[in-house]
Image 1 (cartoon, rainbow, N blue to C red):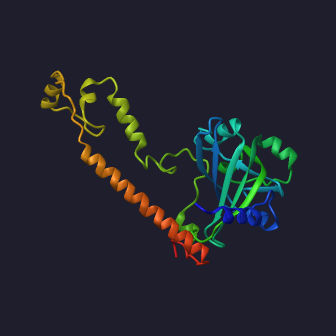
Image 2 (image 1 turned 90 degrees about the vertical axis):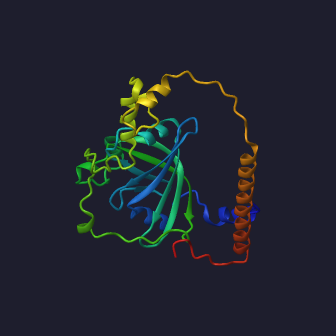
Image 3 (image 1 turned 60 degrees about the vertical axis):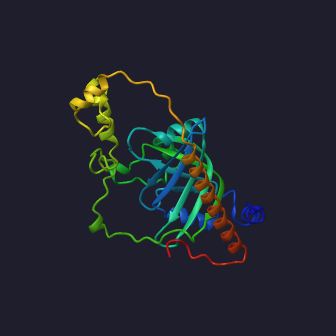
Length: 269
């Protein structure tokens, strides 16, 4: 894409192998971050972590640690780290500075009692659901800025309006319930398995099989020879080609604008 010079300049000017003083201050007041891990096969997972300000501990300029609270029991991130220690952390300040910080490094899992024996000054959180079961200690390898121009400006909701946080809860409703309907789909599949009449139904939401459907299902399938229709395929390929050309044109235009030093204001104003 012709960006080698810009990329080299970014690495030379912005990428460090440690947390400098301003980065350490930034990390020390964050309340959330996004976490990326992968297993030994490279299968990726991204997730979200949150806590009170300072829940990410800056142990020194090359080491940070964050607590693992009680979750859903899947331990996806911890499982990945046990197979592949490389991780990526992205912290974004949406409310004050509208800036982000990337921290990449190698992680290891440490039990809470071991962590506190090595670092006796670690705070003890008074909220039961926020008491660490274990810690993830990260040896910092790369730190660099995340550009501010596309970060939306958010505002905190007063505590009275948002209600108390349900740290450590097992209440399904307070955890979000079946917001995306995955549990309903799973239940429907379980009900369908082993029920021939329900297996005939055309979808998981159809609860009964009509008589015509039952008769149709009983009839032997007629052998047909499909005749491919190449015209629609050609139309789809042509539309895809046009869309790719439009995307490339926009990318080239934006790259030219960057080269001219234009100040893009961001998608969120």
